[in-house]
Length: 459
Image (cartoon, rainbow, N blue to C red):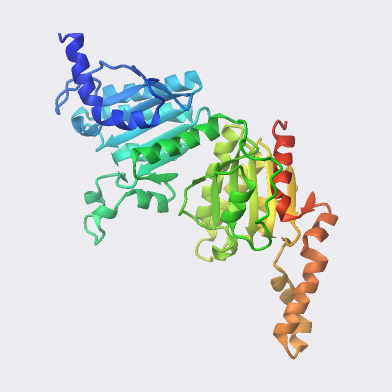
């Protein structure tokens, strides 16, 4: 039997490479390791700790459960013993009501263990499934993530990939066999971001620490003292201003954390604070296809709404959308994805606030701004709200007049303006009771803060 000194020596060696990453993320001297001396003999050899570091610690004074798979030890292989460690770590985090942070660098299962390794995977998935929606779960892909663990992203709230990491359901060489695809481009951080798997992509441990701390704070600390002025006037806001400008002006300065950037760019999602209150943010980007939702965009929004609902975070929509894309080939996927999104909004038991900055047309209104779903809806003075945009509506309603017109373009513009004033202008819609207020864009921040605070404890 090895002495404690010998076991500690081998355990330290087995955790050396991952400790650097953990030290960057966790508060200094806060990590308390669990199951440190577990080890078993495998065809690859043996290692004290089984190549997985587990324990509990704090991130910005928030208690977390944490595990890290070390790819330098037994190739990061997942087997019966270390999967039990991971499952126990996740289950303990649920007991502590603490977020789970897992760091992965694994080439897959330990084949020599056969069905026991598969049962180990099952234990990990069972633990994460029990944790989902109860405590925040975060997966960090540091190196390789091959095999069954690649599916873990689907049942985690957040997945952060290093740019040079590789996530794949099998070896990239196997996946590209018989094709002309480049194995080096399979499953990279960039690829995972474009596929909507990665919540964020980082290059360094310092970037990871910043991302993790921001996400842990916004999800776990619902209200904090704000360093920004709740009465700050947003002087840079006016009709036609870009979405990123609206987000940076309205929310507390430097608090917005974007999620899934680069995936379904017609809608921006993330988290921010309004006068210290953590909120989920969904913002249409009219510069990307008129803000028309794709199936991927709907999935992106649904994931954020589900996370907000799980952890009691208000949702703030910034709307400038002409509905959904016109796509004959993707009708089935659109129906399913947009339907799931509308359902998620309807059943979310959190404060739901909507600001219409431009268009809220068709599904852009129904999904993102309708009175039946939202607790409070305001619109800028220039906003257009209706079934169709003014030009399309004029072409339909005044087709006979347009057919007689000598200058059809001039006539269409005139009739579209008249239709808008009578039907889709924000003030007209407000007079019908479908918008709570029509506001000057400069005061958007104050109105949204007041609404979030009013409905924060809604029942």
